[in-house]
Image (tube, rainbow, N blue to C red; front, side, top):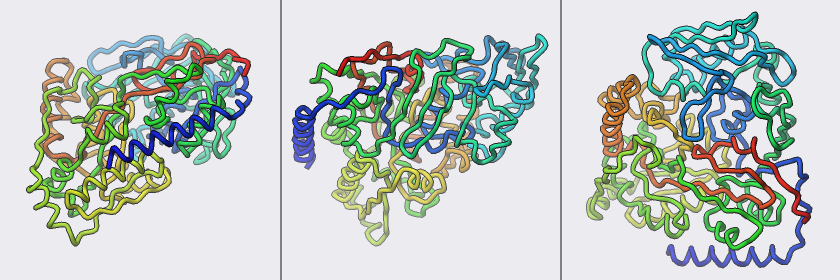
Length: 506
């Protein structure tokens, strides 16, 4: 089945290549505008509520944080020039002269307002910021600092702090719920406008750091993967980072018009189970599903070997990754016994309507049906799909953690107190697990923290509240006219601020 599907896909790719090779090349985008292809719109450009990858990545270009993630995932300076820590108190020295894109200077009230917004109970980020006891700030007259008093030491705190973006109290309050329509921050790019399938950013000339090398960025949302492929191949798109089907990567490798960059990544594709559903409360059902999925076949025939089987939420890139995790697979007889009890039950696997997600869903559904599980696959537009998952309207869903930088993701996504609006969307609860992730959260010693995460990963892999499927490698397709671009380990969009392009004359 997989060899046939793969052969059809290869024929399709060759046909697409032949068609495009005889087409007249379209005029490339303007030299002062980087055009970046995306598969989906960000859920929102309001950074207070952006939990999807594209929303956070674009938001980090528009807004600044006190600190941000560095090239090697270490915290580095952003709006803060430096910081110190002493007895549960972080003191950040801010850069003088910070101003918003509309020219308003940053004020003490803006800083305090920013933290209060992210700490609201309704904020999806409130759980990871609950360790903050109080905030002090001064900004002006020679005093430029933020002081954060913590309730206790928190190992991932500096990395978590990057989600808090500096907001203008006046602008944000005036805009209310419509702030996402015209977000204003202090980042390297300012928001210009948004159309149904286009987001325009313009270089912020008064940015406190190194200014962008390119004047403009256009994020072009092209939901259909074949159309996206065609536009990239015809030169209408400058960069696609992670949104080209793996089956088409070989087409770009054969062309002298593109650079194909492949790097290890921090993304994990997984099955999310709703443990409030009576069927999936039973760990034997989750174990049977895990055992019936043949990951290596999917990786070979659908992912073109550009992925590796997953055992953990965190990827092998992380120093906390446990390389000794082993699956407790059931035998085919044991799987059949579990599934035979579910023949009268309705089981639904949900995916987004992106072609790759549908394809992966079909393969997994086929494998599960072959093993004896009666299952229906349903696919939805991304916004609807994401809302269903966020609100618990699912039984099983194919999801992806993107850019996971710290093993505290286990606490964020699986602690019993992190249920929605937090990110424990499967409603997993295990007191022993909770105690371990809390201890790891407070542990300052690297080796001790690593031992704790070894136990945490073992429990999660045994209980399977989520079932890790594969670790996708990062792939960026970059037109040769683009210069000074690199693919960050985190998969974020920081390189768009250093990249620029030369007109290739086509």
